[in-house]
Amino acid sequence: MSTQVLPYTVHPHPITGVYSGKLGTWLFLASEVMLFGALFSTYVLLRIGAGDAWPSHHDTHLSIPIGTINTLVLIVSSVTMVMAWASLKMGNLSMGRAYLAVTVLLAITFLVVKFFFEYKVKWAAGTRPSTSTFFAIYFTLTGLHAIHILGGIVVISYFLFPGVGLWKKDPEYYTNRIECTGLYWHFVDLVWIFLFPVLYLM
Amino acid sequence: MGGAHADVSKHVKAYIGVFVALAVLTVVTVLASYIQVSMGLHITIALVIATIKASFVAAIFMHLKWERGASIWWSLCLCAIFFAVLMMLPSLTVYDHPPRVEDKMWDLPAVQKAPSEHH
Image (cartoon, each protein chain N blue to C red):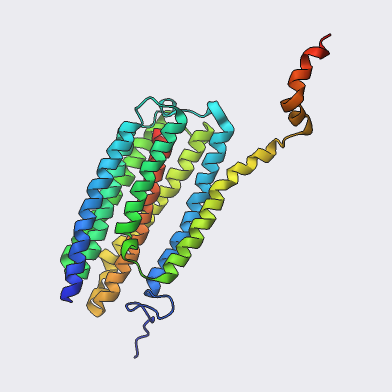
């Protein structure tokens, strides 16, 4: 039985100059920029339209300490993600997997904080997306972002457990897939870097 | 393979540096939000810091600093243009209230004429 292998999973494609997975991931991220960009644009429109009626961060009662902690959690998870790739690049699978595991744990921490210390508190206080325009865009943006975190957890967990077999067959291919996963993960971090000040601080 | 190792260990130093910068800038952006300035300046400061942080993430963590693939840069250029257009869209709301001819007349000589109409 012959094994079919997708071409240019390791070496750069002569036309694009990169291995194909990387180009695919970047194109996907470009579409993601449009998705979040549209919502940011909506935020700007609603905020300008509301004028002085837009609530300041004193009125919305979003917890700045909790937001700050979650920001730091995501930043650290970005570091561990990129360290996982660097470890694999240096041929150290066990170290790479350890960093991936920490990344997943940090991602779960982010979601736990988000749901139990933020959404749950807001919900208990009777705050809904229908409460105000601010909370409509707040729940939409942070909810969409949380779904992306969830997606990251699924993908990283796949490469941590069932997907790790690829390392034995082709370590460079596996390392490249971790780099692509990292690109996505850093993008999710990057979105949060904007969401945090926009929703919590201004 | 030895060369690749050296490259990656250089990367690792950059990762640690970026981590420190991101952590510090996060604290700075929170502290800056407590400063009493006009809302416009307040928003500008927050967005400038966020853009600096995002640039670090894109350049170092996402390896763009070392990226030589032309296809990726072309895709990103297109993406940046469309993103800019997207962020400009709210400015189209000026057409919710198109400037009327009377408004323009009022702006110019009507102010001087106004007192004489009261007689």
